[in-house]
View 1: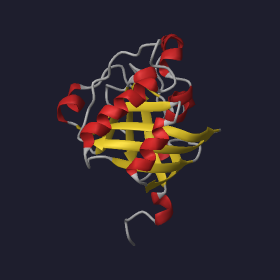
View 2: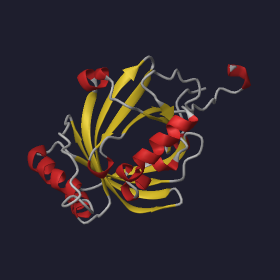
View 3: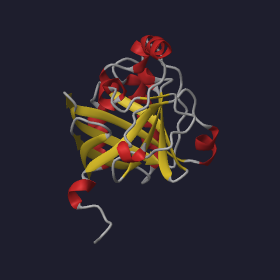
Length: 222
């Protein structure tokens, strides 16, 4: 029997997400990196349609957010203009359709689109996400670290993604707490309710409740 996942499984993403206080030095020094700029054309009740531009091999300086000029996506669009001017052919555009997530599993279908079309859509979108993404291996798992800018400045999320449910995961020490099932940490939510608006409340909540990590091992893993 083949060990390859079937085509239906390939349309699902299996990941666990964690709140991180500080980007690990290994990710900054040794990880591959890219800049991601994206907006949500539709987002409601966990369903979403996302447009993304990705700039592989790049990491952009994230200047402080300025309330007086950077509202309604102005910050992200300003940095996007600079990225596009320097990118040449090193940029890709994708549209994705997503379902609500449940226990680290979510339907996702992606298709590549024309860069110029994606650019014009992002230029017209009020709720834009911009982040540096660093990717590297820890133990036997690939990890991605998203360092957000703009209205989400200061937020770092780590993700571990596999081709099957992420159950027997060795959680590294850089993970402060798990946010896999916390909808506030989805990018579609952050595009409308950015981190800077509720970060103090969340940190108070984390101090009061302490860290939390899902146990998905089942009886055989105990």
